[in-house]
Amino acid sequence: MGEPAIVTAEQAAYQYGGCRDTVGPFDLTVQRGDFHLISGRSGGGKSTLARMLSGLIPHLYRGRFAGQVRIEGRLSHQVPLWELSTCVGLVAQNPAAQVLASTVADEIGFGLDTAGFTNGERDGRLQTALAGFGLEDCAERDPRTLSGGEQQKLMLAALSAREPRALVLDEPLSMLDGAVSRRVVDALARLRREGTAVVVFEHRTRPFAPVEGVKRLRLGDNQRPEQPLPELREYVSAFRLHATGVGVELGGRSVLRDVDLDLAGGQAVAVVGANGSGKTTLLRALAGLQAHQGQVRGVGGGGRPLLGMCFQNADRQIFNATVRQEILFGLPTHDEEFYRSVLDLLGLAPYEQTPPLLLSEGEKKRLALAIVLLRPGLCGVCLDEPTLGQDADQRRILGRIIRRLAGAGYLCLIATHDLEWAAQWSDRILTLERGRLVASASPRDPDLLRPRISWSPCHTAAQPQ
Image 1: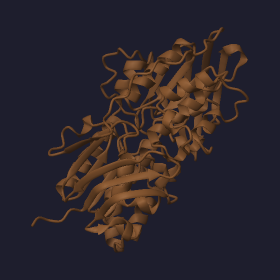
Image 2: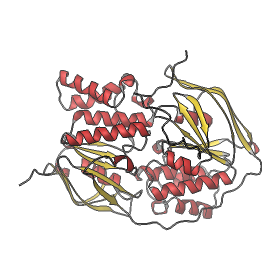
Image 3: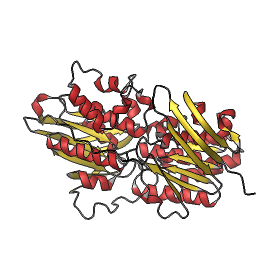
Image 4: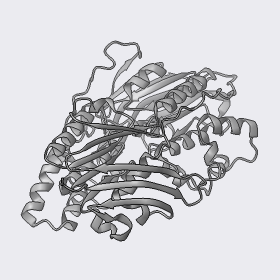
């Protein structure tokens, strides 16, 4: 008889509190040295299955759990979660939600301490994890000051340092640049060769092509009908955004330096660059959400406010009891037909009465966009990693929405690592490197998809000389 499975899910299904639909049922067996790559449409149950395989469901979520999950032969609901975590480790889709410590080194060390490693072994594993994920220069930084991609690397480092028998990773590449993604895939392949079971839930499957023996599975693979785009109100007057000498310092570090921009409404502009290069900071500064040096001003637009923003972490702008209340919050009146068309377009109609925090990360991103689209008077919108958690259909729909927004006179600014998507749907590509604007190119530039920025450990903006 062969070695027993590490994790087995049998007809495992879950109904979240406040939701009508049940997610699942799922069957999956994870054995030593397996490498499972699980993809599928947004909302198809990937994050739910990840939570079940790691024991978060049913321990941390309140709903109806059917079927069973066994971890090392024991029913997951009968074993304390802390004990399950010594066998199966989970990196969630939103890494910021897992941060506990005040420094990067302490975040990795915390898991090693709770696992009971001796001081000598702890220190060795800590240094190996920092080096393996390019985090040495960040060791004493507060994890909350890292970019989303750097937080993702940190959670991967903290989990792999403990060497659980199985790793469950929910969209581990979603916020990583191309070079870092390749290193992460290499690290996961190495762990698998050493006997660790790896289960990856990911829309970006191409980077895993070099990994041998990958077991592929798709969830919720039914096609959605194409929806017509809602009409958007065009602007009467032209709008331009001027930025001169924009710089940002955070925690004594120069995160953004001497950025000059002159952008017209009616176009989509993608902002690309390595993790930690300043993309999110630039969008926040342009939207008026980040204190900065230099000047940002709008010309035209009938004196309206400038830019609305969809955050990289949608949890930071969600606080109402239902999706409908979230979208319509603060609006004295609204066009119900327009609201319905946006809800249908973004695939949110089934969740209208659902608590927003129960949505998948991709659904939350679409909710944030719906909130912005229902707000009157904006000249444009800043979208921070909008394709995160979106399947191919939703990425295409998002591109069509952005083209319609640009056609109506809006300025769309998009921070993204998805270069192929940006090249398809944007009018201009801006490249940031260590806090500086180093290139502005047409998406038809043949050099665009060739990496301009070589990966180096823990990208931080250059300090003033």
